[in-house]
Length: 52
Ligand SMILES: [Zn+2]
Image (cartoon, rainbow, N blue to C red; front, side, top):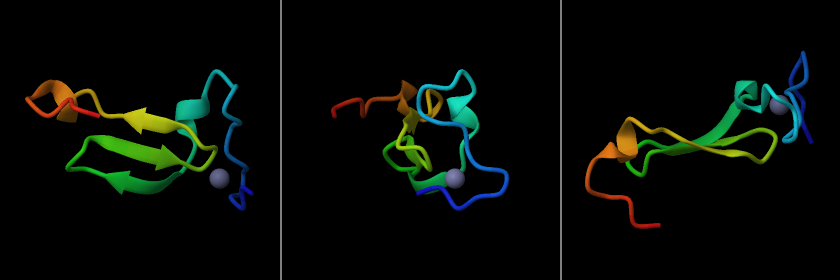
């Protein structure tokens, strides 16, 4: 699935957060990475909207 060069680290890799961002929802404070990881931006969700 990953078409990046170099390829993104897989979901189980220690550096999985280094994968490319394929979609992001800044308003909700998260980003979907190329390897399927959903990375939450702690800075963005430190406010009131933590309802998932
Ligand atoms: Zn990738």
